[in-house]
Length: 185
Image (tube, rainbow, N blue to C red; front, side, top):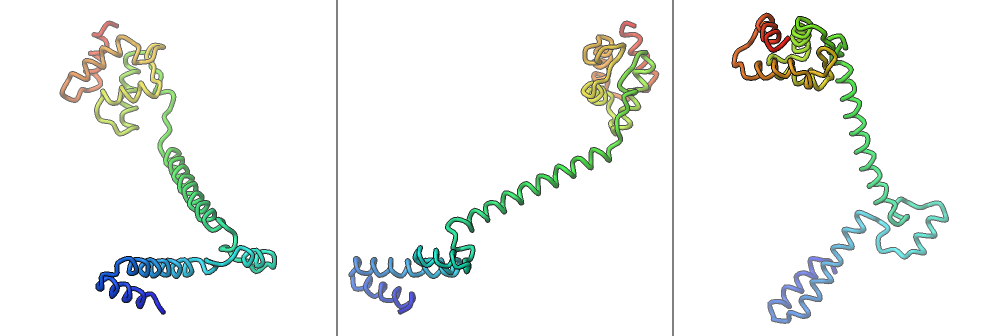
């Protein structure tokens, strides 16, 4: 008797108002369906443990004979794929960093107003930044100094930053130099 016949019998019993028996036959059909599914996915399903153990000791075992091994291998494979992906991302990120032009330390140290303005413009050009306020932010975060102090702690550089940030237009190097020298040097 196959599953379809069991389901038909359950439907007939259901039509005849014999619900308890119909439910039992329906459960049997569902369990048989599950068993078939388990057997297709795991040919050793439903076998006794000693049959499985006999195959293991005789050397004829499959992956399904080791309880939990197939699932553990699947999980391990997922973890390996995850770590391979992370390693590829890390390698790609390192290659991208190596391909980027290295920031020269000479641009991060400025001792005169003229040198600071030139360094800011060169730093912005290297990093493809057209806005001087953004250039000063990045220059500061990379460790840029002016007169021996970080530019985010130097009062003249901070005043210049405020003036540049509040100025709506693009400024030339000479205009910025004038702003810097007027700020107290």
